Image 1 (tube, helix red, strand yellow):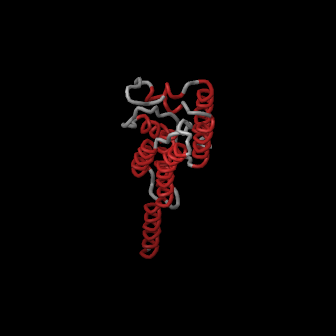
Image 2 (image 1 turned 90 degrees about the vertical axis):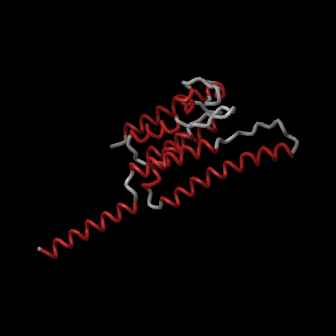
Image 3 (image 1 turned 135 degrees about the vertical axis):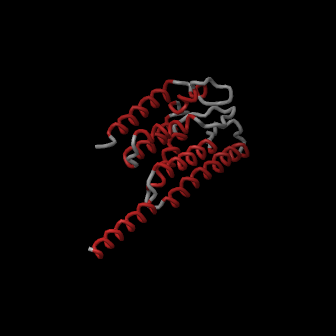
Length: 195
C-alpha cells in the first residue's frame, strides 16, 4: 500500500511514546516558558500517563489508517506543532497538537469539511470549558488538592487552525474537485457536440 511507511512510522512513534509515558517524568520534558530548545522537538513524545497516551495514540493510529496522507504532510503537521508560539508556565506534553495539525491538513479532503471542522472546534471548546469546570467542582466539593488534568486548548486550536491553513493549500478541496469534474465533463460533451 501507498502509506505503509507512514503507518510503520506512526506505530514507531506510538511505541516510543509508550515507553516514555511509562518511564519518564513528563513535566520535566514538556514545552514551557524557559524550557530547553530541544523540548520543542520532543515534547510530543511525553505524556502525563497511560490514559493520555492511549487517547492520543488511538486518534493518531486511526488517522494513519484512514486519512492516507503522504509522509510529508505528517512531517509538516509535526513542524506546525514544533512551532507552537505560546508556551506557558505549565509544561505542554503529548501528541495532541501534532494530531490536531494532521486533522487540519486532512479536513479539506473529507466529504463534509465544514461539519468536520466544526466538530473539531467543538471538541476543543468542550475541553476548554469542561476541564476547568471539573477543577472548580473538585474545589467546591472540598477536594482542592485533586489532581485535575489540564487541557492545552490553545495549543490544540493552534494545531488545527494552522493545519487547516496548510490543508487548504495542499489538498484538493471537495467542491473544487466537483467543479473540476463538471467542467471536464462539459468540455468532453462540447467536443462530442462539435465533432
